[in-house]
Length: 151
Image (cartoon, rainbow, N blue to C red; front, side, top):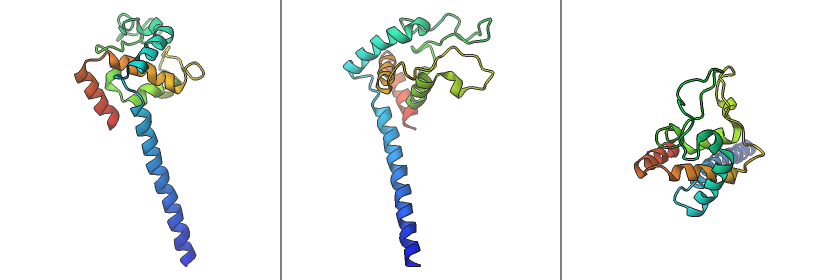
């Protein structure tokens, strides 16, 4: 009987460490996006120009009429400035969509040209791009988005 209690305690401890460790890892990854870090923002600006501006615009303005579907059924690339909706989403979502593309997060019949950047950008580079985008937002928008990310 005593052996069962020891095994149960060990299993409970492992589960607890996994939960706390996983939460800490997630929180740490979000904290690695810092729109006040000039070096990270500069790296992100260069990466954005190379990989994102073609669709999302050199000034983060998105494609024209981004809220209306194209004839092929796709929505145009949205802006990443304050006129868009990027700041409505937590950093982990922005990271995941950038890394994996839209297909992973929408119904199978949803048309999107947002590609996956797996094998193109590293995780650190994706965080740099997000930091660059966020650095363009006014402080009140950044504070709101940070609160969304913290939930």
